[in-house]
View 1 (spheres, helix red, strand yellow):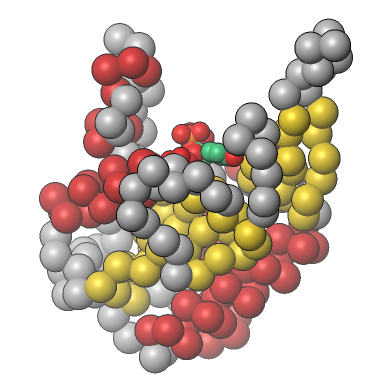
View 2 (tube, rainbow, N blue to C red):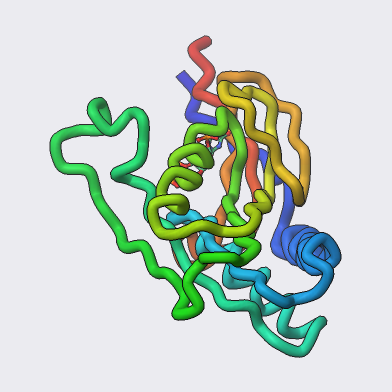
Length: 185
Ligand SMILES: O=P(O)(O)OC[C@H]1O[C@H](OP(=O)(O)OP(=O)(O)O)[C@H](O)[C@@H]1O
Ligand SMILES: O=c1cc[nH]c(=O)[nH]1
């Protein structure tokens, strides 16, 4: 049996180019920075939210408030995750989210279940005026009526393959790989 194969889809430079375009699109959709809050979904969405914040600050002169959501307790498969799920922290920016445009940031959009969980958690924290969904990689396979507003790259992959976004904090580098399951032959 051969090990899973890993095919690079985006390197560091390609991800940074995509993030730069996404940052411009986010600001455009919000009509500027007013009232904008970035919330990244742990793990990896928070790292991407920080990179988007830096990119917006570089291009527009100030950084939007940025926070991180840990959605573990809102997962619909919590019962099967195991008896001791690792629960991280949710950090809201001091501005809170009431009346804001929350830009929800994640690495991959697949079934939409993570985003559903994040939306439920967000609504428990406050009442945003609007939520925009921003993902670096979007693939088919939605199981819920959820769509992304800002997308870095669309990837068409078979159901048994995984799109893996890599970030320096978790993986030591920035990139997007396609991971094929091990070959049973
Ligand atoms: O649209 P979905 O089907 O929910 O898939 C997308 C999610 O899958 C991955 O998270 P994962 O649950 O693997 O956990 P992680 O964030 O800790 O890597 C990824 O980080 C997305 O958040
Ligand atoms: O391809 C996928 C599907 C779900 N989550 C990921 O990170 N990648």
